[in-house]
Length: 434
Image (cartoon, rainbow, N blue to C red):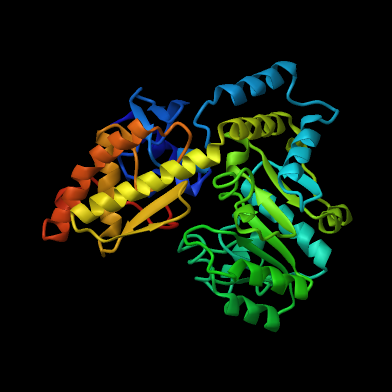
């Protein structure tokens, strides 16, 4: 048994859930065999605790590293910050520079607040928007973190977030008096949103601009108009989508401006920095409530954010990862067609995924992860593209994926999938691990 598997089994006994992020649990990939821990990461390569090297064709730090792991330019600036001191009784000037840069990229915005994780940034945005609107009720569409305000959807409607995150999320521990403060609506369902607004005293609409499918013609424009007509604060959650199709929010692609936007993940290329930007009349409401944290004032995050934006701009990284994502999607479809497999491809090009139209889709996902791991790849049915995913790397990845699709084709024609799996099937949602 590998060092990583042994350590993961130990971790599950002393850390509730095994780790800090559901999306990195071994059971989400390959139970009993996923390497779980890394010793080094560089470019799009990851080394495990046994010094096995893998090419990361999967989640790339859950989308944090669009410039690849250990980008020299970003790391150099961070190293300079560490040498000069990361924390002080005074404020770091980098947060002002980063705020100016984000406003420059989004001329509709006037002010910025910073945090260090996506969940807390979304909670900050909702707090500010509620203060600005003087209304408690929020309409949501998408995944917006783990905080009480969001999970309150599931207090009465236990499957309310199933279409927005993962099935099986329990609101246990969330105060029951938060029930009926947040209302989910489905993407591209304008009529559903309009009904929620007409029936409830909605003060905030919070939504992802795009995750799986793109907006139908006029959808985002109608949401914007609905918010304006009803004095509702419109927040675009760009934690995942930001900096992947434009230098900034993906909403720039659709020419629809929110009142606030939230950025995370790619903003610091692996270093913790998130941002909430917005119009002055909304953002000023932050001063009428209490939002404050010691470690939001450390220097590494803003330093990394500034250099990441510079490097992105110099490389036009968003264009490259979109191009490479389209290439991967086309190749997935080609090999699926070759073996007469039905797949559905989803997501923006830089965050592409596919699913098999089969009752055995989870088994097939597990088989892909299992077989690709043996060939030196971290892979499943989801890929976050980075600037280190060259044509050569993609072509070799596809060459190794072809035989796995052939095995899946055989299973669709009668071969027993269980005879090919070395262990349990991966999880699809939230489950207790012990």
